[in-house]
Length: 490
Image 1 (cartoon, rainbow, N blue to C red):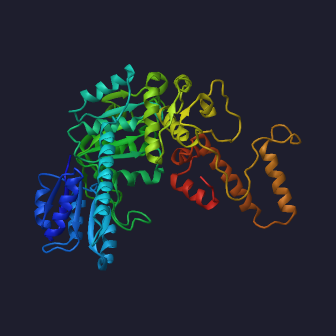
Image 2 (image 1 turned 60 degrees about the vertical axis):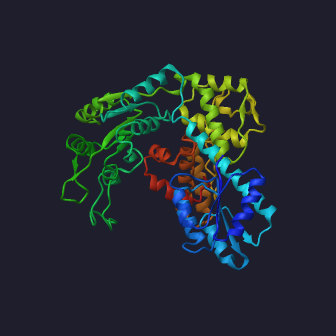
């Protein structure tokens, strides 16, 4: 058991606390000044630190700052006189666990130290549990092949292409390749090339000089510079604009590039890992992906299996996600009954691991009891479930409605002529507004239409804005701005 450390220049305070804590069976180590305590910290560490706020040779607040910089999770109790309440506030702002006013009641002091000790033990347990959670889970043979490939590539700087469906965990594989590589001490920088508008992607990748374009008020480092000495993960590389592929090919060939608006060549020592859910060979045949870039990236190809090809991993993944959700939400983790596990295991998970994670998070909030039964699972995973042809959201991501006008109907009423559908309803709505002399009819109906488009896209992508923007053919900044302008509660 680690000791309770007491720092106070008053010998009587140290003596009283030593005796009281010893009676409680708690080991104690005392120091008369902050300098000696900091020296001891080089070889040992306490479970709880109790320090006076006023000492010759260094204050308790200065000591608190130095200790927190080295041991941020360590509970620190600051002892202070009643006249030092301003200092006590400063102690809390500096991260102190609690302050102990002098003269203190000895039983209360011991109780406070006990509480701090319990906090320290809980924090240590959580850190140990987090350290034991593997970065990737999978007992299925297909995943074991992936793990073996990561192991073989651990000491290599070779370019890797990761293929797999959306939501299968391609970035996790990229991070594992980086973590176990010689570049692990360097940065890991990830960029989704499909999520950034074409006119901004060049600047994101290569940076820009001041004045290179409207709004470029200062020079900016791109992702290649940020990842120097480490790994750059290019996700959804198949969607990269054709004209940028040439620039990327040059960087991969000689490590040299120019910032947007720049005239001096830049160099970057980067290992590139690319990923895509598309068939790049087909993209090459279609003439939208450079063949020479394809061969440059496709040195080592690593296929990540979809979740339906590794059904035996569903139970362990589900337990992991339920535990993680419970920790994030501060609740007791839910448990899946055997029958519920059977339902989940038999589901195809078109959204792969990401969809399972979303379902587990939903269950942590919405399941009525600690044990999840099949009836508690969302509709989308139930056997025989067929989605209704409407914009109603999946159970795991409830639909969000705009704060203002109601959405357009998704099907024509009986009185509407066949084939016109919601367009006829929009025409009727427009006619009524125009005949009534309403102002700003154009703006009102345009907002109504845009709101429904965005909500439908968010429904399909289960709330993922970047993916929704991609499906709508707009930029991520545009969809964020529209959501704010339209007052959508998403």
